[in-house]
Length: 424
Image (cartoon, rainbow, N blue to C red; front, side, top):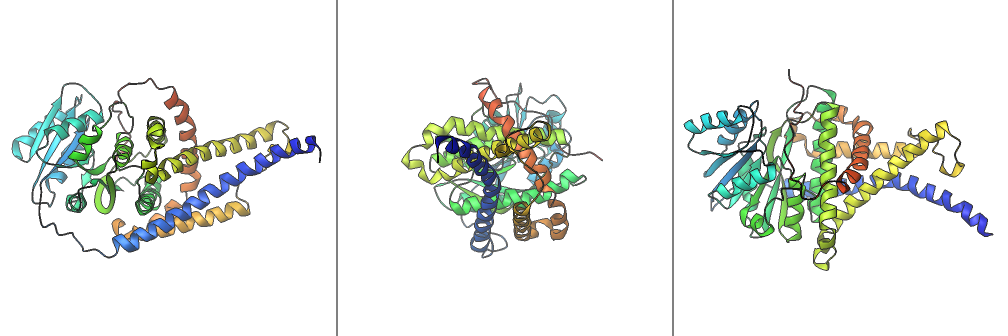
């Protein structure tokens, strides 16, 4: 075999490697999530009481950063004040809102002594708003929710049972549930939060580390936050950043599926694109920020999280390349070694599809009690997930990497008006 033959084989080998990687990566990860999620369910969710009993009750502060939340903040505050926990306070941080958010908060505070309002003169961003709330708190434990979230009455009890269970528990992330389900996008996200996000958090907790807490509902030990310097103002996703900071400082992060919090999610393609692009950019930012610190042997237990995310980025670019080759091959003649004949399922696609449906079934079955028994209804809608969200995840990741690299360093992350669903 001469050198020319070897050169002719290299492109074909690379081509097969890329196609194999695009196929096997989601297949392997799906089974890892299912195994880890089922282990978590059997060992951590099944053998538990209906409500934890806390013997030595300690107080907590419910922090609610708000920016232009006049449509939702009233309900958010009322639900927070209805919390079934012996000792707590609610601190609402009005981050320079330009609507009636501040007026509504002040009116509520006149009639409710457990509510305190912190007004920031100008919009500073969620990270600084949370820090202002933490500095105003009277307690060691902080429960943080978004300004449009509706917290379950027993959510704080479940989260406090973790935070008070050991001195190394730095944070506990809750279980967001989708409120708005009027469109196809909304209905698919109901299944996504069960079959993808909740399952991944269960699996990651089983394997030792969590990629990120849920910014919409998370509890912290203030001592842990103080050690790592609280939230960084320039990070676009403060929840991912603080999760990595805490775990790299060897604090434990728990996941509590019983800590329910109901939220609004995007129901338009533009709103969904902005949200997922921000999530992808946040992941790239922490990879770039902490790569050097992660290389030490002391961080070995955390290695799986950045490795998994990095491989996911490589998969997105590989999948994007495959799609480009398919469409280019329809227009221009390209070497057979690089030709992609179809993007539609073949036997390999069918295997991947069956695995996805199995994952959706397992995860929705685990999560069924949090959805009031709407198991089959959610399963019908989630089958559309791969068609829409895999493409969306691929494209947002491809865009997020150069956007992050070109981002101006030290620029404070500001609030953006989110898409909170189609209004009736």
